[in-house]
Image (cartoon, rainbow, N blue to C red; front, side):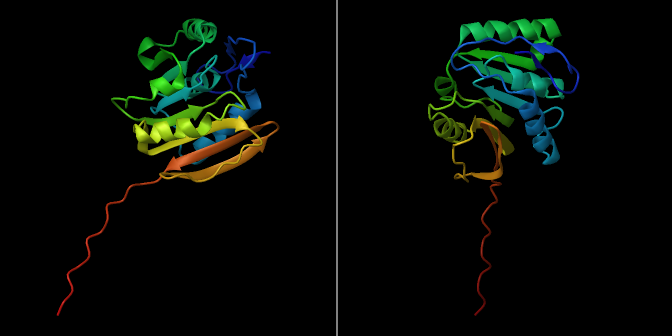
Length: 199
């Protein structure tokens, strides 16, 4: 299956993919729909820092780079997928300052907070393994998401999505066998101090 970047600096360029159980590169129309929804809500724009979890061949993170993200971190445990991702990044001549590859599993990668939180987190876990909720909890517990950031997930269509503590579900749509969920971080407003009562 040929996967191409849909828009931006690298539009039309082929993403090197891998095949096998658990590999499911985001389909072109689903990626386009996702980024259109993010851009229309101000949840993605140029110079944003993006975290791509369960990156696989990196189609989502590469799309973000093509559309102007300042930096993308790719987290992927399969060495086969990591090699494919490195091949695509080298072929596109993406500057090294714009990406980081974390070759390992997602759960351990999220155990320590980052030096700087991310504006957008892309989550595309393998279907049927119940990985979404633990990942969302890890992102919030370790402050991986900025106070105004968003999380976008591609999961199986049968999965039920809802608001979570600290996150508001803004998008919940299905595209064939895929459901897209987009959560926005709830702004943390300081509690107002009540005025002293007058006698």
